[in-house]
Image (cartoon, rainbow, N blue to C red; front, top):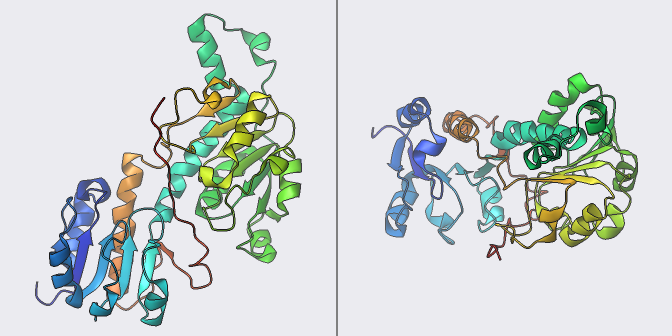
Length: 345
């Protein structure tokens, strides 16, 4: 045990069993001398005692303050929250060659799968048809398909071409869609090399029958989809909002959906829970989901697998390959993920 590198494991608000299978937990303890490794928050004094010898830290939010100068052996910080910890001194980490990693890629398959399901439900009116059936107002055969259309052969636009979009692209392959993407953090040549047409936001909104909003929240894209931009969306298009409500003017979105301008499927909301009197709840052409796309059991356990994979690489002096690594060019452009809590009234 004494010869193994010391790794602080403090995943709270997540639990150990939630993110580590028995196999991955065994791998973790095999390659590292684990300090803490409990569901409860690690006490500050215990964290500070372990920090000077720690070669890696696995945590959720960075809640330890400005203590990195005490970490003489630290090589990497693994955030299991889902985003990069913004309370961390990124410049210090870059200068000291401490890698900062996010588990964001572990959500790609979960969110992509649900994005596809919600898009199909919206265009084929699956949820609407189910509600009508339960109300006793269902319509059969052609009469029940007057407003429906297929995903096959349609134009699809990605706002944000990160790990979720790339996973979703694979799922869309059988549907023979034409793909376009808007992502100012990527070059046109890279997007084109992935078989996707790079385009402007204006063009994407005006030409896509299906629009998937997948961009991570940044300081630059708060309410990016303003009322003026949303009014460019095609009549009866499908907008699938899966990243964060941060990216859209939700009041304008609500107005346009209620006016029947386009269809909406969303897993993210401006407040959680959404107040019971919020007008979006009345929109028949909206599919609403309570932020459930990224919390599937087997998807959460992929966190532990990828964390241990990259931890093993880092401890062997190799670059991580599985998780998202914070880049100096982007570190100041991420926005904190803040979801106001509603009162359900």
